[in-house]
Image 1 (tube, rainbow, N blue to C red):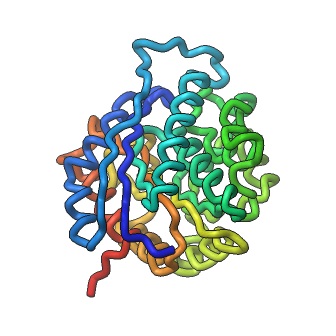
Image 2 (cartoon, helix red, strand yellow; image 1 turned 90 degrees about the vertical axis):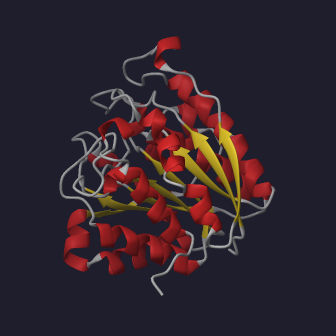
Length: 304
């Protein structure tokens, strides 16, 4: 796809997890000069501000198996409408989270837009976690551990059917890259789902280039293009300390950039989101600055 216009959309939701602070992620990324740096690449950048989100202080958590599910679903519906409108207006949406539960809204909006045009969407999900829990398997009841399951029709109905009754993305068009922390009851969901999961061992053994080549093929096969969902906890906490759920042994600085540069090379990215930046846990806004650098790589910045 030829992208010349980007719409930045903030989704500062933090109801999907227990650790507070990711609601400030969109501000931290904007402070890192996201919009001006994207404009330096020649894009027309429009910032749509933040969608309205509830906060825990004004919300009842509901079921312990899927906390704040009603509020998260409503937020994702709002986000889906904004993403769909951006695509219809000729913009590539760049969504800033918030916790990863907002991805259901981004994917729902993009999926519906392309389905109305007779096509289907692929998905590359770069993350330390599989995000394929359901309310029955989740040890915490935190919905930010369920969004990929929702995107392929396995999660709570309130989110899994957000696209109007259809599965948001076919599992065979989904690549999960960089996973290294999977809950015990979640593992069977990943294995049986049809989603292709590339763990950090795959990256260690095969290298990021080979893994991303296969991931891009999966997400591009018989699709109009793919959405890219980037959880900053994919990167090792030595490089990205300010994330909601840091896990040792993640991708390196250069592995992350290579993955995003390869995405850009395809010209098939339809939309992108960056999630789980937590400035409270960060040092000198390092993680938000890295998030902007990676967005630049995804949208075409090159060394030469």
